[in-house]
Length: 252
Image 1: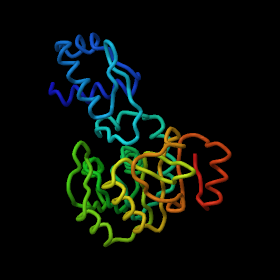
Image 2: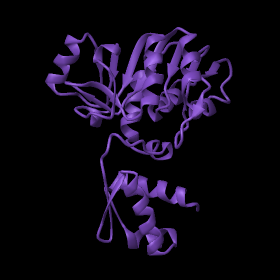
Image 3: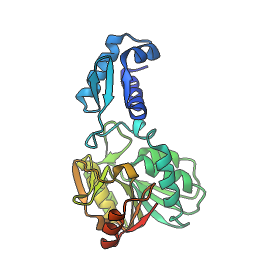
Image 4: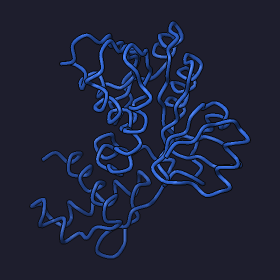
């Protein structure tokens, strides 16, 4: 196993359990404890973990981009619930844009039985998922592959998106807060999503309940940039009132 693969698996364990122990990891991966300590030092430098005596704790940092491999395996039940709600909104013949979030992949998996769908996406994972689907038109945005993610970003991707107008754009975010709006961790991702918003008749924001009342690094915009917010649990009354004032429809 490569070191990067081992560290990604350690991140997954941190996401699932909140902490890891050096001795346990050493036995699991059949490497020395010193090797595991170096792995944990690397994760600490990246802002993902905090080393402790004999192990490490997860740092819940919305400003850090976790590897796609890790994001794909976290909050699966929430993503599947959100994807099911969004899938019911998509009709045969629709033209849709999807960002490179792991939730968008779950949406695609649920609508593969539909006919005559046109997809525009910057997600390499979605393109791979649709490689065996007949009768669909699948457009890649092109662009530069973002490090650590199966995502295409940059000026070329943005220009490609600007050439189209679609029925629905499905995007995600890292945080949503009443005083600061919609936020994400990376400015390149945010720019792609802003262009998708401008290209769509209807914008669907997928955000699991753990992201409410959280603020990430880059502001994407006000709630009004979304027409529908889809989440996995009923928000508090204050949130319902806020979204109603912003004329944003809420589904959960």
